[in-house]
Image (cartoon, rainbow, N blue to C red; front, top):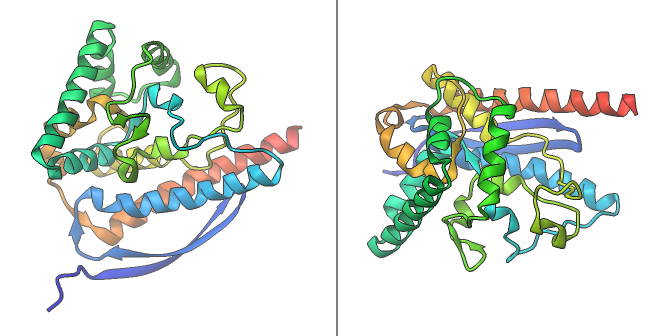
Length: 268
């Protein structure tokens, strides 16, 4: 008797600003934790972003990002609750020495944030009962970046959790010269457009599932946050219903982005 979970296969098509994404996915039919949706969502996000990168190259631009270039790994990375739970699970599965090493780096990062006077604000952001505005988050982004603090998961300018890195990291790419990335706040930075932000859609999904506000959690605080919210993580949902709800969020996001870009072209 097979131990493999039963799956239902879906053929989906997404209209993005750069073309259609058509793909087949297998979704578990059993009840699953919210983290079960992550591989599917990451895959969809990467397919959509691949079209953006192709469009950028077709218009004569070059994507500057290369392995070993980690300037963006000093920025504040917000992640969704499902990503926080998955990250905590990954660390729990590591051998004890590596787990202790990463937990120590996370602790040191929090100490540095506390010394800079922004740890309390970041913690409040992760636990807020209200959806924060971009205006409220922007000063925190600037204060965090001013520290030039390497991501706790950065080793020798390379991501130590690359296969499980947050969606926000997967979506960031630039066509401006790599030298400009020494200051990611510079107006000369030219980011590649992002048609659908997977962290945001997962945040919206988690808010719907739990009856809470959509929240984005600062990466250095994510593991601690996940540990404090284990009771919520213990909940289970039907895999197909979970995927359909997540996909609905993706469709809505893409619909808004398509309309925004079409409106921009009409106004040019």
